[in-house]
Structure formats: C-alpha cells, structure tokens
Image (cartoon, rainbow over all chains, first blue to last red; front, side, top):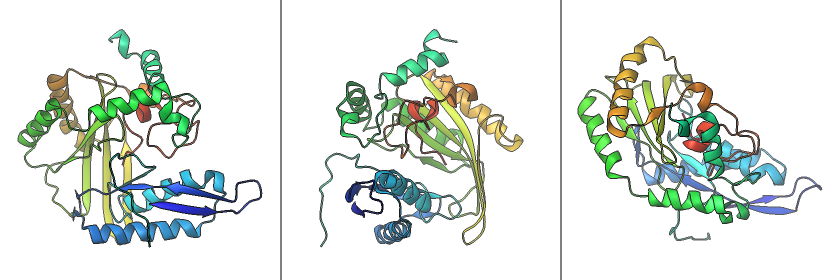
Length: 98
Length: 194
C-alpha cells in the first residue's frame, strides 16, 4: 500500500508517500490466516499509526516499524509473523483505490 | 575459528553487501554496488536450496512432537529461518516456547535464540527473547538442533559477542532502522526476530 503522509512541521516537505509492503504468513502459531482477516487487521494497524502524528522525514520508517509491531507482537499482535517493510517483492501487480 | 569467520572479517563481509551511510528506502541504496550484490543474492535464494529443504525434512523427522514453522521470507533478508517449538505445543496453545534457528546466506554461520510467549488473556501475557545461555528447559533441544545444523551444513555458530556487535554505518536491507542501530546479527541474518 502507499500512504500519503501530510505536513506537520515547517522543517519538512509538505507531503511524502510511504510505500509499505505487509507480508502476512499463510499460517502461524494461531492457525490459518484468512485474507479477509489480514486485510482488516492491516487496515486497523494503519489507522492506529496514522493517529500518531509524526514529522514527515522520519514518519515512513516509524510508520512501518509501528505497524509491524502492532500486527506481529507475540502477545498483543493480531497476526504473529507479519512483516512491514518498504516494497520488496518484484512482480506484484499494483492497484490503486478507488 | 576459521579466519574468515572472525568478527572483523564478518564486519568487512557485511560491508560488501550493504552501502555505507544510506537508509534502505534511499534509491541509491539498491542502486549501489553493495545493494545490487545483496539483491542478487536474495533473489538467487527465492526458491529454497535443496539443502534447506532437506534440513526441514530432517527436522520433521527428528522433532516429531514439536511444531515447526519455516519462517524464511523470499526476497527479504539474506537468511533462512525456522522456529522449532519445545515438545507438546499445539496450534493456538497459550504457551509457545521455541528455539529459532537462523542460517546466513552470506557466510557459513548460524545463530540460535530462544523465544517465549505466554498469553494469559486478551492482549495480556509475557514475552521474551533470549540469547545463550538458554533457560534449562531449552538446553536439550538447543544441543540437538546445533548438532543437526553442524552435521548438515557444516556451519559455525556465532557467539553473542559477535552477533551483537554494532555496525552503526549500515542499515539492513528490510529493517525499519535509522543509521546507528544495526548489529551484525541484523545484517548477516535478519532484524525481524521475535
């Protein structure tokens, strides 16, 4: 997904895009991970992180790290084993919404 | 120890695969000679090697009462990884103790760490990671696993001192790190440890 991060400080550029690839395991120690569940949990994690306003220049790294920690924490995470990185996988077709 | 596997030699090695002073979302990172070398390596391993596949089969045979999870992620970091629970774990159980095995694709070295999760309620529980020495209940499995890795691959296990050596001028390939945070374990294997 691509997230547009808005300006919060005059020291940083007005907007920046943040590319995030969320890698979800097909199965983990909780059992099978359904696509529908993964989509909902990833969206929930993104909303939580977006509520925490961060300076743009650092926002993307922090955004990905926080999103990964929300999803993957062994105790509180919805989907242990998930990764949150910049785009890594070649050959993935990209879509825009809407 | 093999002179190619000293801490100094391994620090030099990871500098051949990671550009100095660049964040991994800087376009110059992957365009650099070091970045291209690392990309070529992880792409060469997008399909697990026959040795790794054989190793997973051996683990299944050797640890029949344990839960195995091959956590290797293609295209990401230069390592193979697998989690082996202590005997008796079943999917969904609140207590999940395991030993995690990391095998580098950069050098013939490996690392083991212990991971403990105990869920006591919704969003509640305890969790820790531990490097050697492991708690006593992990040690028998640790010894068997180390023996199996060394007899299968001939790799050398790295000590905590080497694994946790700072490499502050590098950023691992997929880590959400700023400069100054990386350790040798992040660059030789992966930052994604849990």
